[in-house]
Structures are given as C-alpha cells and as structure tokens.
Image 1: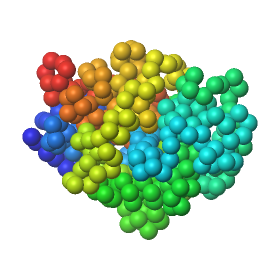
Image 2: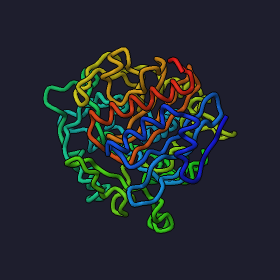
Image 3: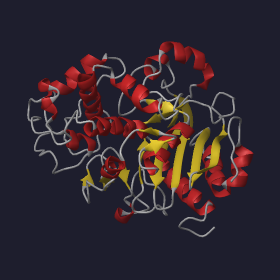
Length: 380
C-alpha cells in the first residue's frame, strides 16, 4: 500500500485515491473549503494519511494539522460512558437523576443515559452559553430547563448537538471526580496513542501548537470567512459533544480500535461485547426531528441509514457503505466511520463549513469516491 504523511500530500492523494482527490479539488475551486485532511485504512493497512489544499492562511494543510472535529468526537465521550458501564460504575438504563439529582425536574425525571446516547431524550433546546460560561453554569442552565412539551423519552427522536453531552460529561465527572476532558484524554486518547487529540486544549499546549491549530471557515456570500474556533477561548473550553480536535489519523486510530474489538497494540478500551452493544442498531426507523430525516443510531454513533435514502440521508457514509457501518459526522465539516464488512476506516475533515446541503453532497461524493478508488462496492 502507498502511505503518505507529514507534508502537503496533494499529489500523492491524486495518485492513491484519484476520485477522492477530484472531489476535494472541486470543493476548493467551488470555495467549499480551503483544504481537507484525510485518513484512510483498509484491512489494517494505511492507504492515505495526508491532506490536500491549504489552511486558508497560505500554508499547506498537512496530516499534522490539529483539525476541529466538532461532533465527530461524540463517540469518544460515548466510549467513556460505556467503559464506566463495563466497569459497573453506571447503569445505561438508569435515570440521569440517579447521578445528577438536580437534573430530575420539570418532566426530565424519566430521562435515562440510554435516551441521551440515542438522542431520544427530548431536552428543551436552551442555549448552553458555551464557551462563554463555565462548566457549572452550563450544567445549571440545562438542569433548570424543562422536557420538551409533549415529549415522551424514547418515543421520539431529535439529534442533540450539545446539551445531553454536557450531561453525560457531568455524569462521568460525578462518578470519577476528574473533569470530562481529562477522563477522555487520560483513559482513552493517551492509551491509544492519540497524543494530539483533545476535548479542551490546555493553554501551554495551545501555545506550543501555534499555527498547527487549524482555522475553520464558514461560507457567507460565496466567501469563506474565518470563525473563532481556533482561538484559545474556544479550543481550551471543554464540550463533550462538539469541541474535539486533533489530526485525522488519530480519530482513525480510534475507529481502528473499535474495528479490532476494542483493543489497539495491547491497550484495551472496551470489551468486544460492549463494542458490539455500542454499534448495534438500537434506534430504528425514527424520523429525527433535527435532521428531518430517518436516521438510525447505536449508542453515540450513527448507523448506516442508506436504506432510508442513500442520496438524502444526512452525514451518511457514501453510496457503497455496508449496513453495519457506524461513525459520526461533525457540523458541515467532518466525518469519521468504520465499515466492518469492508474492513475500512475513513476520517475526512474539511476546514470549510458551506452549509448542510452543500456539505452533505460534498462528503457523500467523497466517501463514495473512496470506496470506488478501493474497488469496494462500486466499479473502479
């Protein structure tokens, strides 16, 4: 297999994954992104670890750039919840109020950890105040908020970008005493060799990284405008559902670990049966009221939903993904997934956020192209 990493690797990408390169290059010319970082492994071998394009400030995007994953990091928090479950420290079907008593008010008494992981809890969509507010203030806002009117937990579905994930992070903190970002960093990232992956980048590390911290851009009036996501205020503020960042290859390590049944190089993060539980199709055939589309879920991961409309499903894995494929996308910019049937791991992170329709079309084409470049599920 060809393997590339480190420096700008656009030409290598063109040679190794030509159809995928063409999709990324078109996106650059359409001003959907300045560049895309990409990691692909197949049957345990690295196919590509690099990037194409620039960071938007005149520097080549490389495989070492610390990219913003946004919600593509949610499965890391989910794994820590499942690890605590495996250790007998929490019950997935227990009400959240068992661990956070002040949460159990205003109709939220019956919400369980399972409901949070499957996005069926129905929390009122209040503004969390992140990153301006401190952790405890954010939790206080969520605890005070009511259940959505008319909602019965478990009977309706609506993707929750952040609120339920702060709650999950707080459950971990109350059981363990360490902040959620430290738990994920020390008990998951470091054992897996994900040394540049963070939920909250410490100030001293942020200073050392300097320009390695990726800029992210939003499309406005046909122009990519820089956001504040790279600033210390944002990068240094923990959000268990939406502020992970690191190189694509390290999120790839995470999915390779799940593909291998929860173990990487002798370090185990979950037992195989818990990995199977996480990636089982628990939420089936429900219209997600956030995405306005049927999307199936495991525990903290989105399960392949092409049977609900391969060309319309949001944050899907391309036209050729197998039914057992699981992973998660990040708002208008990223995706990480594992296809067990094809022994394929893909992580793609763009530095441009062009809006949901353009992003879903862009990454549907990219993921499909990767399968076809590897002669998986489509003609080469």
